[in-house]
Image 1 (cartoon, rainbow, N blue to C red):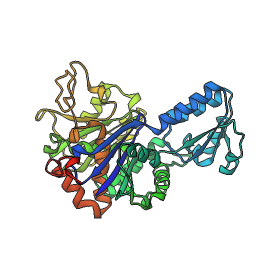
Image 2: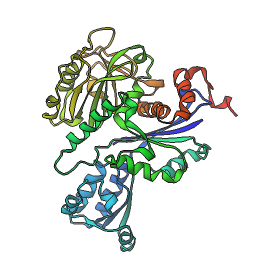
Image 3: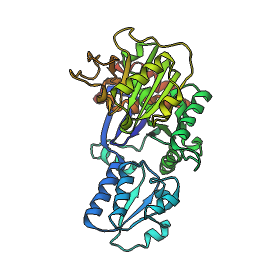
Length: 394
């Protein structure tokens, strides 16, 4: 069985090819620039040349790509965009127009002069990924499924903030199905409000394969639970410190006892630790986080998680995990001795922190696609005893 897992963040897209013939540690992997960074660079190059641009394709992750498009317009240069591509900048297309960006149909975009730089928007470029693998003799024409993770605020009505809308969605999913894989969907079952997830599913629809899409932060936290040290804990506190968002779950045997989500740029280590301590003891309130420009917090279990037990207090993953790395630094997979309020453990599932999201995606595929469950779960439970190495398999 082969499953391609793609975890798309702001800085990188992390890619893992699961092949059940091999031990997971021998799976092929790539860490490449994220699509939004690639688009950002293309637009910045056009800005430097002083030429107009047109954005076509699908809604994708914003941040760097959106900032570059807005800067291009502020520089007095023409920006055209199809309605679908323009959703990357804002769910409200009137606001996009107010930025000085002209909305055009795909047909109109195709008739623009040849000097207009065409920028294809979209989170998933399967063809490009397949070409990279193919250069090393690895073909992707025999996949059993593709799984993709992106962060999706959802499409909020005008009178509701993105932060409130996003957290209401998290709460609803946890109450409906108390599992991290509740944030994963088959491509034909994505909620209508999750526009970015739907855009990814649509862009993969021509693959004629089962497609699973998932939110990035729960994928990373789920992946961290497969670290051999973390897996020994029945109850634990895990935080994914992403480039834009920090999301923490309090877990008991995989069930969610509490959650909070904040913007990474709005917090420092002292504030993050205070939120984590409050999440652990059950005192954290939604307004504590929301009124601090975060998304929110909820505690579902009255039983506090006692910190100070064992060798560490909190499991940390994510590209901004360095927030916890006060000197002296420790290697991944080691327990920190830093004088912080909490004792962090830096998770390395199957020996690779960068692929935490991919491993979480893989575990979610087993839940969403029952036909894959036995093979994936067996491999993840006992990877060292399976397949051992690529050269051992014809």
